[in-house]
Image (cartoon, rainbow, N blue to C red; front, side, top):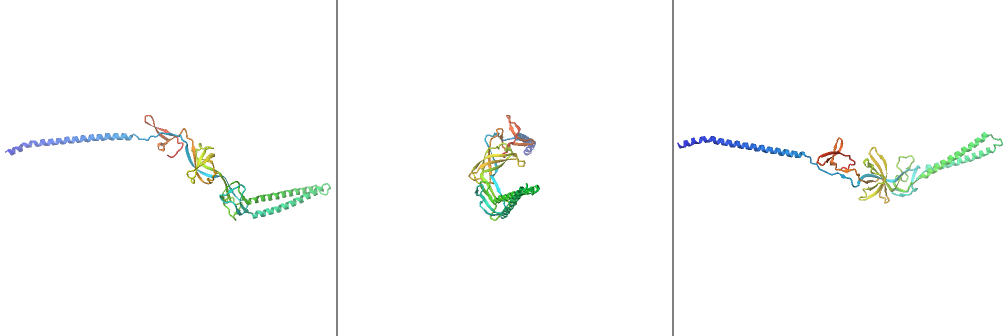
Length: 353
């Protein structure tokens, strides 16, 4: 009896425990949902803040630097002799001997080579004979004209005959003069059988040897000798158009040659072409360099360094600061309120960096 009554007493309490469990389960679910909503709201707020921070651009700021020091301009240059003469033989023949090799220092009029001219020699001999013949005819014509002129008063000859004899004498004079001029020309040509130096200098090329043919018709052939004046040298530089206004006559420069590391050679601008080449857009500049030591050689390459005065109106900026748009180049500047202002610029010189 007692057991049965205890079992009956416990039945009413089971629904109450289930209700409590469900209530606790619902409270836990609500709490979990509220926690998730709050977490998502916090994450969304953090994301919005991070996005706003990333939307603000981060830039590197630099200050324009005015040009205060001289700028160095380095350009490639070609070294040439102050004077250079290509010597061609003026008399046809064969080289009998040559007396100056490359590198030889020669004086003006010094014989470089001797040419045998047998054909010219025969022409000179023939011309001498023609002159002697013309002189003999000239003398006979003069004597004849004088005799006929002496018979004028005797009426033994007519005036017409006298005029003819005087005309023959004048023609003989002309023939003798022509023969003498031809002989003088051939003798003058004979002097070219000796190839001589046109001025004091150094032999930079020799293209003949004993027995070689020298022909006056081979105008396109290589010269027999090349003689150059190397006490002073000419240096030619092609400067870009942007530097044309900075390079003026009398401006000093330095030459740097690869065969003399660590050493410079002074030079000075002698003149410019005063014209911009239409193809290369460059100015041809000629410099003069002293070569008393003989270290500069014709045909050598040199780097020519100029010191250009600074431009008071120019400032230098890094290439990364430039912004290129449809209307040209701009730079982004910051005003007093840290706002960006785009300003157009003109690029005067591009140094690459």
